Length: 282
Image 1 (cartoon, rainbow, N blue to C red):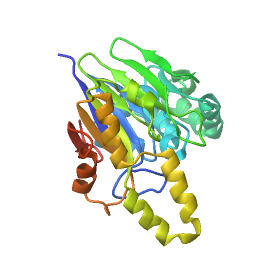
Image 2 (image 1 turned 45 degrees about the vertical axis):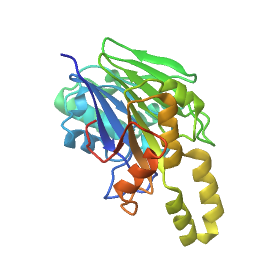
Image 3 (image 1 turned 135 degrees about the vertical axis):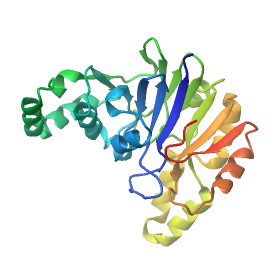
Image 4 (image 1 turned 180 degrees about the horizontal axis):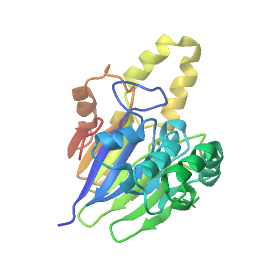
């Protein structure tokens, strides 16, 4: 029987690398087919830790081009290749994904040529395809899943997206980085699982108090670009989802206990609330 699974690979929010949480990434699995969403620092290691062979990733979807969501892109391509990639891996995302891919091949040209010559592998460039998109709607479909994108507000980035995966037995929505979004609510309507980014307002105020020089800028940025834990519960309720999974935590350290995150989200949502952690299968 076909089964659609979700594994959170990295649940940290922001570009600071932490020991508590890995950088943003998650993988949707339909039987043995793997669909990766975002590729933060160390994504290949997290795939291996989750028991997912990098070479089994069929499609990659990038929500937006902040470094914590795409800096592991080249590592993913290389990691999949050296571990046995034998068919085309397609990367989907907004511009400038094609230019980024070209830059990766230029930067690693020496290693790629030497490694292909010494191992007999098919050239990696022949195994990577790029599908850029700049509008919401269905961005991918195969026998396992239909993937639909909704544009979400994440200023100053104009091209930021959430993705919905409709598999044979369940639907999973991944918010990407976003402020509260009616388009995201519409995308997630009736979904089984909504994975949504989250920040904790009192902790942001404390962070700002430590760095008073940047306090107003920091708070303004986070509030404009991201979603508070209180709003997330409201979004899940409006969409009528079954399960809300909190992820992309700001702050991403352990200063806010799990039960605090959960309690705040449950104030406006009556369904199941899961506080995400690295390598958690939902």
